[in-house]
Length: 294
Figure 1 (cartoon, rainbow, N blue to C red):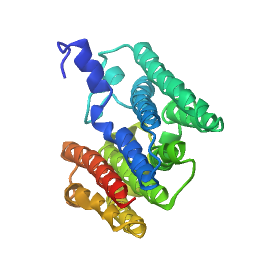
Figure 2: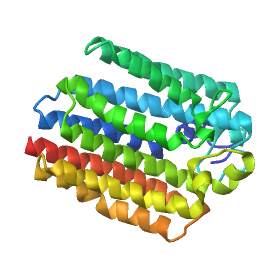
Figure 3: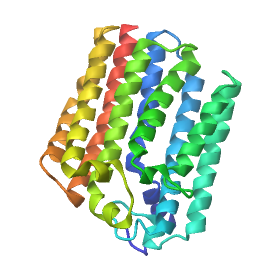
């Protein structure tokens, strides 16, 4: 991306579209769990999708802003950073982050109003987690807690929330799906932070990858992939059709193989793509299987 690129292309790149499967997959998986319970409510599923995508883009812009003003992105390898590259003023990126987080909040309010009001509390916690990941005086993403947040909010909360607003209950297939999706979403961040160990170590960004070290991070990535596969086996006790989620296995295998091979820097960027596509394929396959087996 160059300074001559159109503003639209710059903003799209800054939104990090390759991370969007992590927003779509949990809603697909949660709706699959609802289909298994014969309780799909399509307009609620679409609202949940809107919430998830808006929050994902908002988080991406918020991280761009916070890392940019801290100087963390000055020498980063990988996708374009709006503030770090100097292409967009920091305050403009902050405004975009707040706009998308606000949109997610508005859609979430509509979902809570038509389901149960205690979901508003979940939404408030999610918004706080989105902003303080790299923002604020003590960002938890700099204290090796980023993966925990992704697992909780883009796994457990997103999948179980999507299922709950449609079913009105928490089911075993939904729980299995939430753990599997959360593990794959977490793996995307692990690969991203593995790539950034050299720069994060210098700038003082203490990610889990920095704490575990390169070898430990590579093992952790593989472990997350195995957990996701194990969750398909658990879901298969409800219906063997859940094993259709194994359609993601080639992508999982390719990503895990690249990480295990010792790839570094730009060599890890394809892993982000493969892990994101694996999560989406996993969610679609599992959802279709649950719908058939329901």
